[in-house]
Structures are given as structure tokens and as C-alpha cells.
Image (tube, rainbow, N blue to C red; front, top):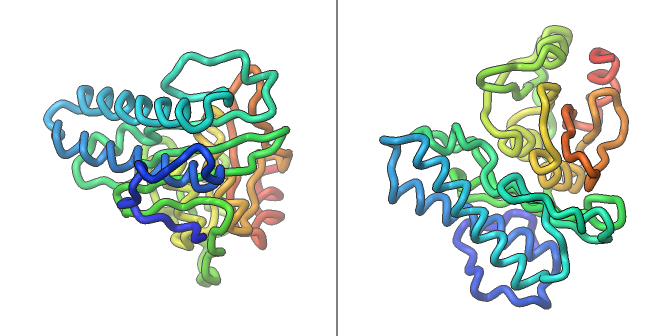
Length: 259
């Protein structure tokens, strides 16, 4: 089983007995295909219409398939009403049907993603991040570690609002800055070896980071809060404002700079 699933996988072949890792990967890739179809059909003339259609189309697909495949598991989604039953469940799917709606609505941009994660008994156990613009889905359990880093540290930052902590880390490391859109695209850049550090402190929710963090950890990367503390998911309040994902050998240095 590989951690890189092409965007051409056939979801009709997926049955309820399928492994959770395969379910996450297949659903993320399928939602990515639907988003590409919506993008092609609607076009870019009205960004608001395209964003709304993308959010709803991907949400409908993921909600329908999770109901079919995992009917007893609650789902925490950016695009659906929160179900308080999740707080008493040992299994909760955490999804972001379209991470990076701004980039999705801009022609030529591929830095948007689909997130599908499974939290079990206090830990993220499963995750998949589809990058439809690249035709790739990164998924647990097997994610290749990135290649050795170049001499100069590369750091992904927000296109529009780089965090103050990120700017401080970049200056201290003399890092090359790589502006990208969605959180999933940024974490994936570190997983794929296109970048080395991602620091965020501008506010996020659990669905923004759950699947990317699961994938990053499977690749042997460091993932924590920016104070070095543990990332905790499936809480009553899903707000999770900050995140650090980086190569393991850089974690101690980056945390020291931040703190």
C-alpha cells in the first residue's frame, strides 16, 4: 500500500469492510476529483459562486460516503453543523472538504486541498490530504520521508498574512520564503520535500490541521503547537490557533526561536 494515491482512483470500488487508511485516501481523492469537475464546469468568472459550489460539492460527497462506509462514526466538518455526539465517541472523522477556497477560485492555482482524518481514542490515527491540482493524495500509513534538505532552510508562509512568529523564525534562520495558500498545501510542501518549516499562529480549527498533521507524522516530521506542546483533537471547542510542522532536526531550533 503506497502513501501516494493518484487522483484517478475509482470510489465505486470502496466497500464498508475497507481499511480506514484506504477509506480516507479514496474519499479525499474522490472529493478532489469532484472539485476539479466543479472548477471546470463553473469557471472563474464569479469567485463567490465557485467557492460556494466547491465547499458544498465536496462536503456532500464526503458526508454521503462516510455515512455509507462508517455509519456509526460522528464527523466534525468545517462545512456541517457540529454533532455533540462526537465528544462521547472513540472514533471521529475530522474533515475539511475544501481547504483553501481562495486559491480554489483563482485560475491556475493548485495550492488548495481536501482533508480527511480519523481520530481514535485520543490520537490522530489516519489521515489523507488530496492535492487535486498536483494529482496526488498523501495518505497514512505509509508516507515517504522527504529527501535531505538543502543548505538553506525553506519556509512556507501565508500568501496574504504571514504570522509574526513565522517572520521571526525566517529571519533567524535566513530562510527562503515560499508563499502558499491552504494549510494542507503548506504542510504537504514539507512532506514532499519542497519546504522544511511551516509555522502558523494566526488562528485555525481542528479540520485545518488534523489530516495534514497525521500525514506529516507518518513521514517522520515534527508536529506540535508553537510552544512545543501536544496537538489535541476532538475537543468541545475545535479552535486550534497555532501549528508547527518541520523536519525533525529543525524542531528544537525553531521552537527555541519562537519561545
